[in-house]
Image (tube, rainbow, N blue to C red; front, side, top):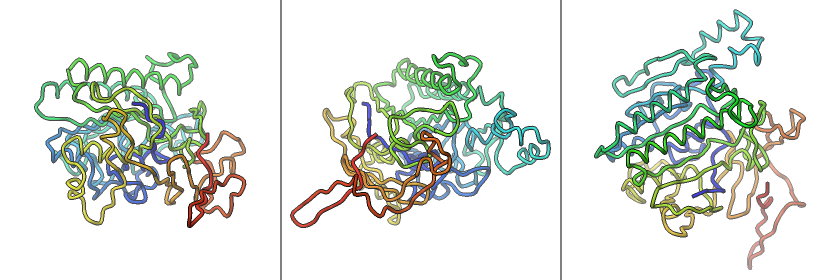
Length: 403
């Protein structure tokens, strides 16, 4: 089922936390990606893998984490039986090493040494509950090993699926690829394999292959009929670093325009979800409530597992996905942008309060994302406003959604 109105947040860490907590960033508190060992993360949150563990699920995480490096935020402390990946974000391991992109650091011995000593984990890690205080360091992530991470992580996930074959326990696998996050370094095996032969497109072809391998393994192991698969992105494509991604919508990663948050998403469950396309609303916060319903914890029963001070933004979309002609349980969704409430979509209408001026700093029409200037109020929008008149009141929205 292809979901053409599925929404992430504007950037990676807030979205990953939204998937794990069922909350939007203003509620879970991870408002932007933490960089170079900054504090903060999932510490103290009730997460989907935690809840699934209580229902007897085996939980495996693989790949990019980026939801905090402090002890309480480590994967083994927020619900994972096992995690193999890295704790930060791709460019933190590469940008200061690359003599082409950042020669002022890479070719300066003093600055390079400073980055080597900076307080963030520089390694691929293996995290298990056997050690709650830290993860075990594996290989150093440099400009060579960065190319091999996605192949290695695929092997880890395939091995996990083989381990669970025939098990009487259900499983949850969170596979978060390194690609296609700038700066992209395609593996030697995949370099030049795309038609465009750019680092971004070569990486994208590789990621398609990763997904194919995981799906084939589910089929081979006889688990496809028992497994809900959701493929999505944590934000829209980036626009600052060429070769950049493309989107039919305005804006990019780092903005709350549609191009930054309306992300490619589909749900697959062999024999359970009928192939179709829907433009009805789906938010990645809905994954938690939906997954828990399918695991046997619907509605009020799920609410009882959270503190009465915790607001869950996700809604249960199990019927939307599974029922023939199912309709979304969501009529609206909140947009956020860093620490701001950015707007709301209701059906086909979108009201904007906070947004990004795409060429406010860098004077190129296609450059938005993290390079843009943010406005936090709209005084008037007469030329694009739409009035909806009822018997008592007139409601005014900023604009209908358009590319």
